[in-house]
Image (cartoon, rainbow, N blue to C red; front, side, top):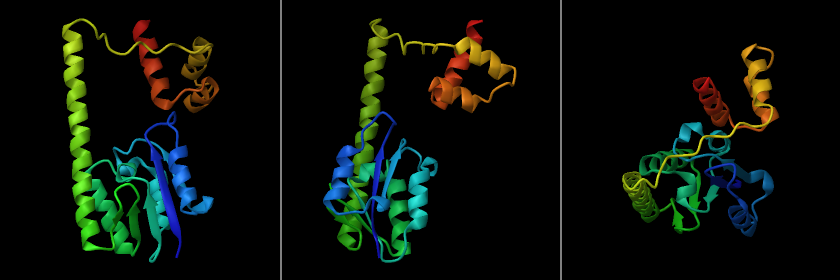
Length: 191
């Protein structure tokens, strides 16, 4: 019987320290702390979570700082908690004080998940309204074009000539995959 702690932030630039402190406060060994820096939007694109779910066994306990760190919508949250329950794993969310071993805990997780999803939907709606107003007033021009890193031309030509793999160019120029392909598109459209 082990206790695990799952930590997630939405991007590589975000900091996990606050959640790591919570894991330490609960005396979770570092090998039982799973840290992921990826959007929670799609649970199938979360390799660390998938690895953790495969690791968990009957009688284990999974702790998260908040349900929003575990799942980003009610359906995913309920699906994940059901998987945990089927494996005999106890799920605890510290912020919401939820323990899924009780009927009240299951009810509360459904309510909190729905509220969290509603708040995200409202945030997206407000953001879209704000952008629409800014566009009308001429204050919003969209994102700035991504700047090319030094030596872009050299590595772009090498990549196009099949002398280097895209993944190697990304490493050398310290680019994320999405940024690399945005630069390629931007560069090729600008020719």
